[in-house]
Length: 305
Image (cartoon, rainbow, N blue to C red; front, side, top):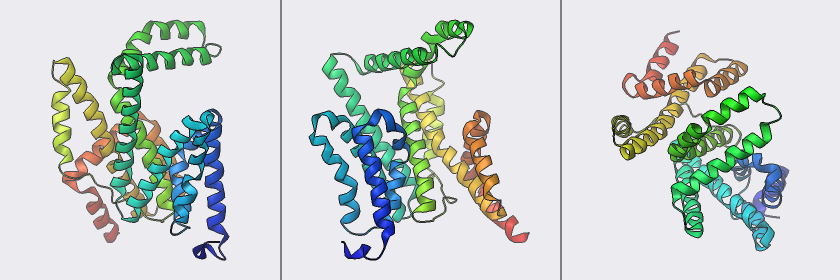
């Protein structure tokens, strides 16, 4: 038994949960893919209770199943996710919440690009053709799954609009990938900050130079040139998610200052995440926070109350 864990059953319990979840993801990924959403945070919770080489050794045990050919794909998926968990934990320990999202998102996105490039090279097609094929397959599976649920008129309307939907997804595929990954990393960061280190994310703030990227992306998205427009639009959406996180941090700071009941906080967080117009308001809140310093104003009013 590692000395750091003597007399403390909590690390062993969290290690067991991590191993069970990781092994399930490697061996039966088709049934437990939702574990991907929680695995980085689960590792952070375990790492906060373990010490030394033990917290790294346990994390990589499920990867060993990759020696069995049938489990190679699952082991590779687990390896990527657990690396993201390691990065979140290391950045969180250094009180760098922004890096806890940024670095895992960059690493995951780059790996995904390499995978797509590998598929494209193997099939002799371009990356755009590979993405188009994936999107088409996804749409086929969607129709197959929901054909018995949707009424004929809805299916007809979907079939008519399907080409434009597929074209839009392919066009925005880079930003959809990055934003989806960033949201998963943020979600895990929120869980880890509460259950692992018990720190607040109310001070999240984008560097000042990000506004330059935002302006360039906004201008580029309005350009008539198709390639420039596509790159600008994707970049604009990616930068917007960073300001969305900053806007959420302002809301978190306000709730903490006003000592809002946890139940109401959860309700408003769900409302922000699920309602498009409120998400846009959160993005604008984060964007203008760079000039109006909302948290400073909220703190002053809180001190005066």
